[in-house]
Image (cartoon, rainbow, N blue to C red; front, side, top):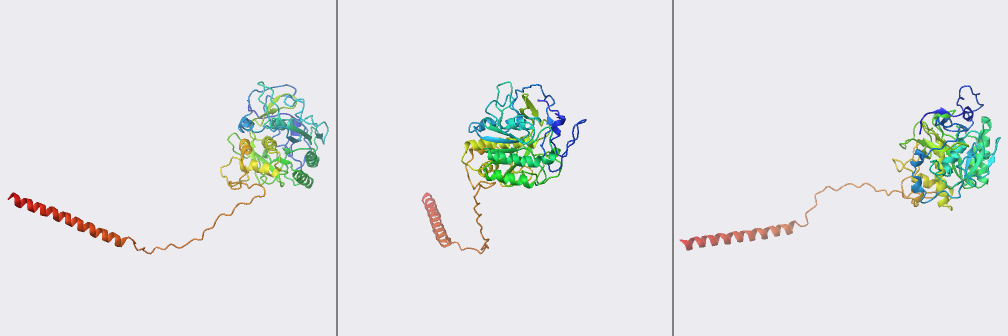
Amino acid sequence: MRRVRVVLAATALALLAGVGPAAGAPRPATTSQAPAHPGLSQADNACEEGVPRYIPDRSPSLARLAPDLAWTLSTGQGVVVAVVDSGVSTRNVHFPAGSVLPGRSFVDGGSTEDDVWHGTAVAGLIAARPIGSTSGVVGLAKDAVILPVKVTGRSDQGEQRAARVADGIRWAADNGARVINVSLSTATDDPALREAVAYAVARDSVVVASAGNRSTAAVTTDGLRYPAAYPGVIGVAAADEHDVVTNDSIHGPQVALAAPGYDALTAFRDWGDCVFAPEGQASSFATAYVSAAAALLRARFPEEAAPLIAHRLQVTAARANRGARDDVAGWGIIAPYEALSYTLDASLAGPLPPGATRAPSPSVAPQALDLRPIPDPTAAARAVTLAVLLACGSAVVGLAMWRLVRSARSGG
């Protein structure tokens, strides 16, 4: 796989908040309130619009999550995952009939059309269908069903995007989405977006959102990003090939988990395969992997509520300190198989299961040590024993001497 950073298309950059366009492209109208697609401008330089291309290798980022082991327990069969994004192209061979629902568009163009490629790429990481040895593209939840909710397009109006994202989340929750993927972030706490997320959480949707990418953010300092920071949302940072969350991701209290965000081999609009984020890490793609892991869990545990699904992902995540989260990687890197095979246990280090309370640690009051000499209870017995031994020893010695003297006299 080639690792060259390029600008895939000037029109793709029009979706970014606070990031300049490619040379010669008109500057997009954006504001700091517009949620940005993290990592939107990174793609393998061999990807070309209108030219089908297939890559036989498995995505390194997917391989890091041990999908074959996870698939022994769940493939996400039938779970509806909403992708609130730029649409999902059903003309891509990785999305055959039945894998993508009709969805809804809140902008120009249908929900199963993708003018930008971002939504199709995200959906591919979640639930792309394999097509054989010619392509290594396959979603982590390869049998889940995608519900495309189109909220951004080629002619995007940034100042209206937050409202459209809010409408899209609400619509997805009303139309059967068990998991809602939002690979978008903004530093602005928008009331409509907050209410939409609360609505979706109340309807038991697992909402997964990007915690923010520094390279595509209007505000690049660490801190809260939305909708990742809203209650009930799983905020996701991107990790590199060493499971390290770098400064490519924005750090903050909104980070609940991390996932691979590099070398993401996935579906490329209408034209087969492409490698995204060949340099650096993009939380858009890390978010997609967490959504896919949530879909695996919802298929295996269909009766479990969204908070318990989130708990499974968090308590089993790989981290150095099992008892604590931080603002960089949250509770750690997702481990799908471990989450699928986890047995609920409130005694484990890490986040508690919903409704559980941790048992208080027993407290022991310090006590002063008594350092006074303690009489030996066996002293008298030992004295008697010693006296007997001495007497016996003396008798033996005396007898030996008597025998020696007697022998000497007899010899004389």
